[in-house]
Length: 124
Image (cartoon, helix red, strand yellow):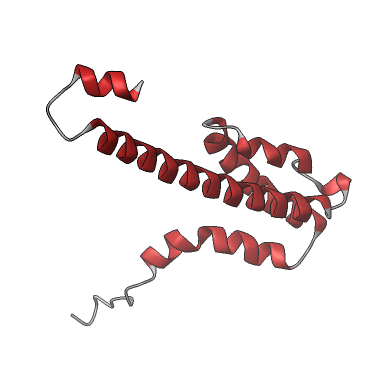
């Protein structure tokens, strides 16, 4: 296939160089996808383990539903539901660290609003 492509578009470098470059790009992309999938599986496994330790009556999301994060494109939407319901499960179970966990989720917006010291305009 690469040889017919090189014959159809003569002129640039030799077809062997083009084929080697294409194979290198595909290999780098495949390694990148493999590492991204491995990271996602590791995160899903950790979330599954954490959620499975919460008693069933306090679970706002089943541990098996966390694996739906692996579905392409659907996982982007499901991500928001999973990371919203896991802290709710901990709040329901009354674990004191659940308050800190929900505070961590709100910290990026809080850091932006609290980064500057308050200004007392009455003294100006």
